[in-house]
Amino acid sequence: MNRVDGEACFVLHTRPYRDTSALIDLFSPNYGRFTCVAKGLRGAGKSRQSWRAALQAFNLVSASWQGRGELKSLLDVQHQMNYSLAGRALFCGLYVNELLERLLHQHEPQPDIFVLYTRCLTNLAANAQLEENLRRFEFGLLEQLGYGLNFSYCNRSGLAINPAHYYFFHADDGLVLADEGFVGQCFSGKVLLQLANGDFSEGALFVAKQLSRLALGGLLGNKPLRSRALFAPSAQIPR
Image (cartoon, rainbow, N blue to C red; front, side, top):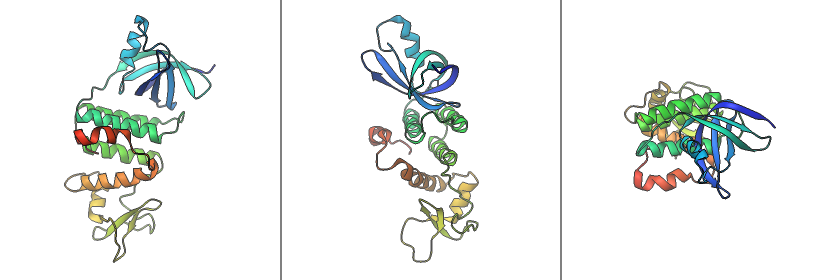
């Protein structure tokens, strides 16, 4: 059977499986997102205590597994590093994990997104500018998936964004110049150029949130994100 040993992975999610086992959603640079069954993980035996400690969401582990099908069998796991998230940062982390689970195809290598995710977790653990960190992650994720937003040029015309004009988001064409009399949500060219320079100050952060939701909405479809439904009403997550 195909076997992998000692691959660096992040733990995205753990859920019960059958009597004492668990399904573990993992994310690695070379094998992308995939699921392993950890046999006996929820049992009373002491042999799985270290596994249970290691297989917590946001932990970086060294994992070994085997299997030719979609569901792999976890053979060993060693804890490498944990990213301690609490409060709003924890909810943000759950949101980011759910984005990966919804948007990444299984078993597709994603080394650049792995680096992007690592940077995001590092900033969340430091409680550093949570909302800006989420926006940077979302835009980076969209870019790697082939749906990046170009804040410098109008995709349809190829012309540079004009700070004196307004633009709207089109699902297929990205940012498009809004003609006179256009009715709908528009964004100032001045703010778009601010985002192009990585500047999220003043009102640019709010515009970034609106644009990321529009761009991600087309990929996520009509199924709502669980993290929003569970945590947004009480925790006021910055999403």
